[in-house]
Image (cartoon, rainbow, N blue to C red; front, side, top):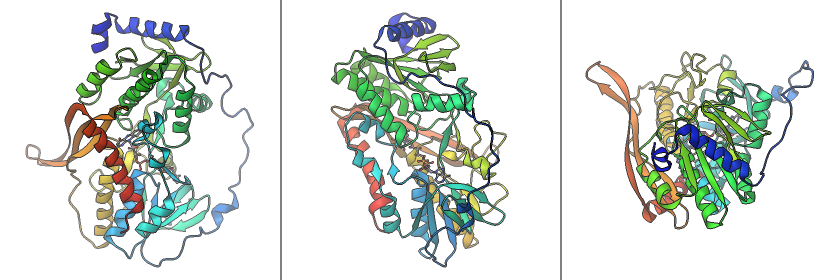
Length: 461
Ligand SMILES: Cc1cc2nc3c(=O)[nH]c(=O)nc-3n(C[C@H](O)[C@H](O)[C@H](O)COP(=O)(O)OP(=O)(O)OC[C@H]3O[C@@H](n4cnc5c(N)ncnc54)[C@H](O)[C@@H]3O)c2cc1C
């Protein structure tokens, strides 16, 4: 562990030192106290009548493919379906009023790019790609009758793609009570889901005037493995530029970062030596919101402010729709990993971060995979079979410096290969690192994001 060598502290001492620094720092944001969820008596509820009316979706007449979730996966799946077959009636159902991107958001946090880069209109995406956007939250799916129930009414489908992303699992940080979990999320939002959490994190950063800002990197295949490191670099740069007497404390559940870390470690060493401390192998066992204290197996950490990123699990709607793998502690989708089809239901598919496969949970992966899912569906309509997904090298950029903008990068390939030894298909993931931080990779980082938005929202089919 690099930090241990430099300071001569062991992990337990590092945790003690970090805590002492926070105790001495300015008292900070977000502390509060309160009780558990549901002090009220349970009610006997009757579903509101909205579910019994038909949703106002323009009649199209063709085979309908409904896509639940307008994130990186759903947007591209809808677009690719229409690209494959213009005669399809594609309906994208998304509960948010407008799109908000997580990719590039760490740059926006420190004012390196404007909010306009991250936010886009579902009306534009639907209009330019010739599908329908239904602005609604899906509450249930009757897979037997092929009916989707939303807060704006019901609609039927012939095929369904479910792409709802992730949920947080605070129980694995020792926060078992749902009310406490909700309070923790509201007080120290992870900001690994788009929208208000990110807006709050930016506000917190602007108000931060010193002390220890904790970020956590949870165990498991969490959303966007390098993003906590990118965020640590951006926040440290912000502290440095604004002369804030603070420090980012990155508590990583892993002993070593889950990817080739050289470029990021080098940036931390060269640029943020006094501003970032990473402690690896930290197992978080509890969080005391009021006392601003994180409990770990090695001791307690007191912080000034934090963005606490817990382990992730498949979106809870998967369970409601009866398509979660209940044997998987992460409750990700129960799909065949080659066709993305829900086991036992040939008309329902799951894409994006809700998938159970072990490759990187990233927008670029969701976007690439969407083309495969769309092809599986249109091939199935035509009675054809399709070969399994195998990606080319997809670029994943990680910003390490905002001013000037410099990034490092990874080229990631994943998919299924034929294993001659066993005669079976085997999953593989490869990553090639580009660890030398540069302005050209910084430029490519922004261009990649803008190119994706151009494709998903503005290019006409
Ligand atoms: C800080 C950060 C930086 C990142 N940087 C990168 C990067 O540089 N490159 C990269 O490739 N990836 C990056 N990622 C990862 C990327 O954001 C995710 O992998 C990607 O968003 C996954 O897409 P998805 O469609 O599965 O989920 P999401 O994008 O989360 O979309 C799910 C959508 O479903 C909707 N939804 C959920 N339930 C319902 C319902 N019941 N009814 C209607 N709608 C519903 C949600 O509102 C949401 O819009 C980053 C993530 C973070 C947090």
